[in-house]
Length: 202
Image 1 (cartoon, rainbow, N blue to C red):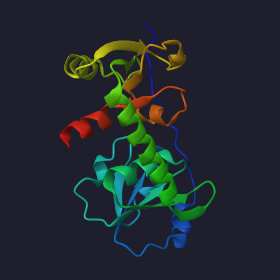
Image 2: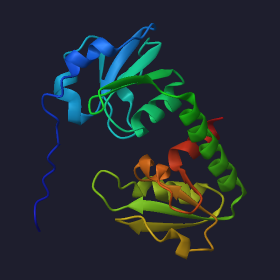
Image 3: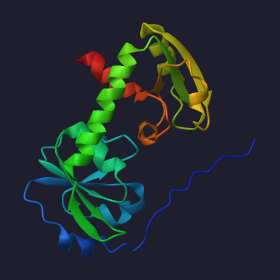
Image 4: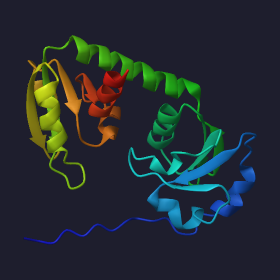
């Protein structure tokens, strides 16, 4: 069996220290980034840590009033704002732009989550997605959820998530893999397992 080696892709000499002159934040803030920019960011003032996928443990316990995300894309700042309920600012090393996360994006994100939760609640038959990818396989959680969800539930194992619309008897899908899948438009109702866990806590 071939050995799998994971090599992180990093951006060198992104000029982030120079770009920090554009940052204008009145609140007490902490800086976070992804692996691509970690080497250039870790020595900055107010640095809290690296965000990995949906993992934002580096900000837990922080007394910051806001966060500065250094990186590209909307997923990480949206997830950060959604989980912490605090302001998030973005410094994009590629576009060299500094901005505050538009609340409209967050409102759309939250509206979608609420809609999918309502669909899950009303569903009687659900599909539970389990990824076979390294680091995303949560079979144990999927089995526990299947036994306790109180619905007719089936586990689907896959490496690549597609063609879910072919299973037209599944009323809602529960994702146990990377939560970013929720952001993709797969044409079917889907909610992340973590969101259901939060619902049950309430």
